[in-house]
Image 1 (spheres, helix red, strand yellow):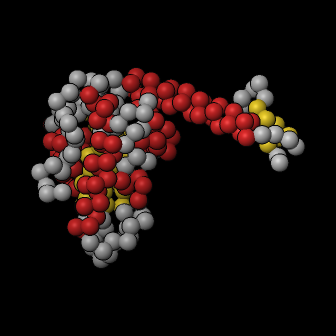
Image 2 (cartoon, helix red, strand yellow; image 1 turned 180 degrees about the vertical axis):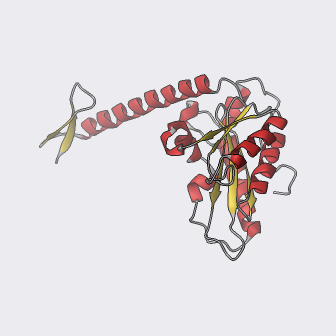
Image 3 (cartoon, one colour; image 1 turned 90 degrees about the vertical axis):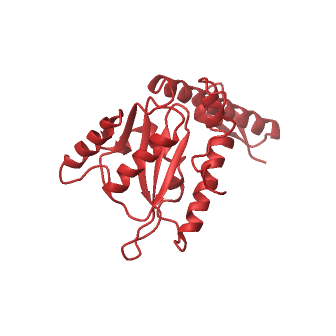
Length: 232
């Protein structure tokens, strides 16, 4: 049996001809410990970047399927950096008007004010041919008391990459076989309820978004559901 032996330097692994299950357990214990250290470092960094709910909210749009005629189902998502609370909305067209409508939706649904929204510098938040649309989106955000900044290259912003993977669109972008808007909306609602209230997230040191929110003083919320007004 070939087993893996742990060297004193955790980063180095050696292969022995003989070994035991205990050696493998030691390895996985080390990996778990390193993962916990990294998760705690990320959690500390998040509290520095966004020290309170609403301090920074990432907003993004992800097409879920190929266009069908004039329709292209797209999910707009907003994810609060501090708590990871997420709101999202399904639209059938990727337009600037949809982006503005979703900004208003997110502002109404979060249980705290949004101070800063950060988006990719791309459609529908900006026009690749000029920055006029980005300025217009920023102006509309400012009218609502929200500061707007745009990422010229989101692939270089590691926190955005990490958090965007937690969104409905980040998980399913381009992979949905679109048949029914009703089914997509139902799936989105179920995903958001699970994510916000029951999903234990390493970058929150194992807390759920709702649990993290309660550490900031919002003790009155038993659950967070941006679609609570609809019949589930």
